Image 1 (cartoon, rainbow over the protein chains, first blue to last red):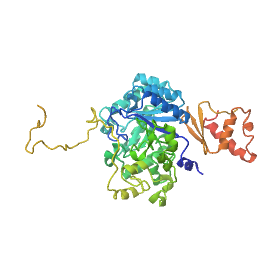
Image 2 (image 1 turned 60 degrees about the horizontal axis):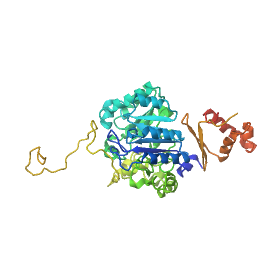
Image 3 (image 1 turned 180 degrees about the vertical axis):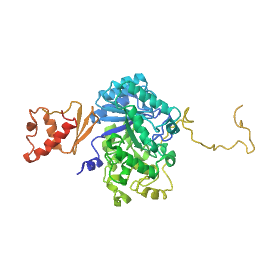
Image 4 (image 1 turned 90 degrees about the vertical axis):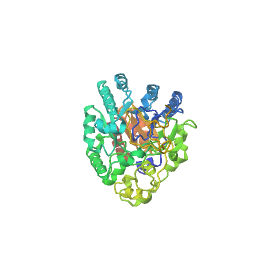
Length: 389
Length: 77
């Protein structure tokens, strides 16, 4: 049995897992995969979070990818980071940089077991801020500057690849090099608010080819979180696992303790359980959803494709949120089968959770919306109509 | 004498084991339970030969090669 086949049938514990610590966020990125913004009042307490870390230590989960929301806005963020690293659970956390000032950078530089990913979705403020909000580019660059000045080595710049930034790949690399950082590219998913902007932001077929060629040329010097295995159908496989790890080698714990199959699948259809009930280990080992995911997958209509071995039918979440069957092609199938399948889609799944800011945030990206409220009276033209004046 | 790097954590799995190096963040896989036994036996052995004592002679070169790879990647030191 090949190693990858062992992974497909599931491990005793995840290799790593993503843990969204809070849905609270100072930004309102258009493509947020967790529809974050407002804190959920049911958020795990400090003690509950520490109990999760204790269990991860017992299960020997080597590290957690902490995200959100913006995880650093939790008042116990550093306490939890210290607790994890003191219990043999390494931490990689993603941040927009809002709390990475000189003091935080000094603190991080003094830790052996913490990696930092600064999110940036444009190599210029113009491209970045259109998705992440006004001022977010400068905030990220300031954070990277503080980390560099403090002597923190090898920060990561984490980029979600979109239609507007694929042409900036070389610029991202140069930016990362200038900070002594490593570039990390990941795939845009139609998850959370990403579903709303998917049609406008997901890379075109020509851009997918450009991305593939760029990744092949830069090899293991650029991190990808193994998220582009669907591009392997352009030719040879990219470095990495080339396997959907959902419920098999990875999973997600959300801020209220719900366990989902993967970070891109925050939806009731992929909810395996909650850490508050029987603990994380029980969910990982026994949840019917995860046990089902670890069964042999058929590949469905993809199994006859010559690239199925490396592409594996692509991303489960991308299929689900675009209304495609899970045992068929990925919506971005580079052989074109996805586009064909999408023409038959009549409905996409409704989201089952949303923590978006109501009314947006200051400086946030503002998509054009139309008011659906009728005028009070058909002939009422006063702009103050209906207001208590 | 080879030994596990002090920053390396070993997690047994049905197929063998996962090794994670907290310093380099590198993940390695041991694809054979017997290799896991050998790695764990390094600590307390006087030599690699000693740790390999239970491995059939014909298979020892493959085990030595695996140990060499683990040394090269810093998992063993």
